[in-house]
Amino acid sequence: MSEQVKNIFKQNIIVDGLFHAILKDPPPECGIGKDIVDMILDGGVNCISNSVLDDVYPFKFIDLCHEIYDHFLLQDVIPEKLLVVDHFDDILKAKKEGKLALILSTQGTDSLQGDVRLVSLAYKLGIRIMQITYNYECALGSGAYATVDNGLTHYGRQVITEMNRVGMVIDVSHVGQKTAMQAIERSEKPVIYSHSGVKAIANHVRNVSDDHIRAIKRNGGVVGLCPHCVFTTDAHDKRPTVEDFINAMLHVANITGSMDNIGIGTDRWSRDTMGNSFKKVGFERTTRGFFGGFDSNSKHVEGFNYYDEWENLAPRSP
Image (cartoon, rainbow, N blue to C red):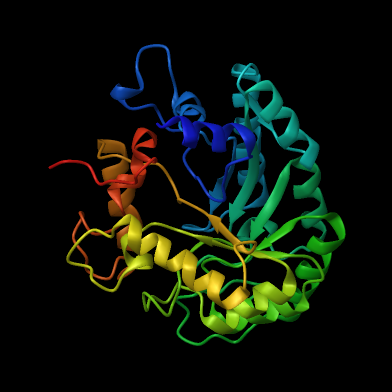
């Protein structure tokens, strides 16, 4: 990493808007005595939003409680290098102390079990970002893969209002186009796409249209761009380049007039392990067609899987 890059990292707070793998075992190259938190910090990232739960299967509120407990337990295990975020000041505190600031988030709202009262309870337990749907229909509205996007439900509008009241950030990644637009327009607080792409560049159902980018600009929110292959290019027979990713940023900037509404959400750290393999197979069996038939080398940009390669985002050598 060059001195220029090191200085940029040192002088700023670098946030990964959706990480989703903080509790995974570290890879061998992490080194003896180091863990994933060390790798993240060594890569210059100071703050991550980690998805404690995603609605791959129906979950209940008690499941959310268990996951929240595990993340606070992680803080108890390594307090010298990790701090769970309660308020923004905690991010500044973690930066000053050389720790990783950990924001707890969810992908989906099944764990609310249709009860708007659980929004404030989830907040009090530590959840600071909640994605309102996860690909398909739920009690709040329609996901990006729903056959018909019927928009926000009455309950969904209630949840948006309650999230605004308690100070929980609304995430519309994985959300249907109509439902997302209605959520952005209803919210009185900034809304985020934590990990998506640009539809004008890669015509993927999960990507953000120009109209939605303009809506985010009006709302004061952020479009978090994700480096996965299907989100950055329509050429799925090759890995995307860093230029492809930058082009997505420039597209958003050209629409909004600045870089102020742009973020990065890498969406998990992963490698080929037996555990990941059987989880992937289980997910594909219950969510058929999600990967669009692409082979295992085309599902994401492998260059983003190793923090020591983040300087140039180069893919690994064969």
